[in-house]
Length: 348
Image 1 (cartoon, rainbow, N blue to C red):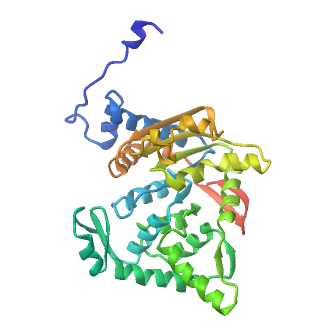
Image 2 (image 1 turned 30 degrees about the horizontal axis):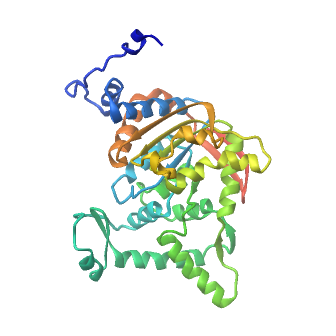
Image 3 (image 1 turned 180 degrees about the vertical axis):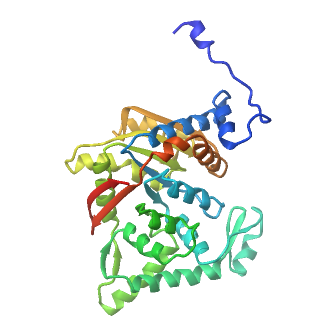
């Protein structure tokens, strides 16, 4: 590299009077610095993966995105074919169900008296609160719902498809996935209000010495591994990190261990506030993931280190505005299941 090669691409100050839409704003971010440029790079990589005809795009969802008001953004991703498979924490889906039943999260202050909140049965998530009495009722309702579901082993995909059918709210992640045929997985199901409710069902079945509804997370593994095999090309959109990130990224190593051809990811973007130097998976770079065989050697990746409540709506809004042609020709993936076997993956 020569000196003149370094002094080639100029920084171009963003003109907020000229940028009338979110898409135009992120287009302008390309010639700025720091995380604004990284977010523009995420937009570019996202559109690249959307333009691969038969690629499956996995969304990893962690953090308290639903209490933070990001639910409609995620629904837009599902309904506009920006993602094909969703892997979420149990908490996000629980809060989604909480709102689907007509309840709300409320604005609060991060320095409220939490001891007082406990005495009046109010739960706090930073600067957001919810009614714990309602949450307790929903936990019990979940236990009653699974008692009516078929006994035996089921994947979380099957559970949420059944639950989605019972939800009337259009702007529900669970309902959107059900209507659009998007497989929805929850590897941390037990670590949520859903898990609490199903534990009550487990106890009742144990005491009555009968088989009940059992969520089989290894069945989940087998199902998502098949999606990776039949897709061959795949991309990843990660909101935060945690278990959803690792769960999605372990599909290729799982294929290898089970004796199949391995299909690492070719595209990936992440919005995170976690730093790689602490060694946690949430901050782990895509470069580090190369050492595990999770990505191809020529994978296109981008990371924006920004609060997802800022970065996610900007990113999705910009992709919807600037990628209309790409999205318009992208077909919905149709998954045909025979219990835990993915018998067909078609496009329509």
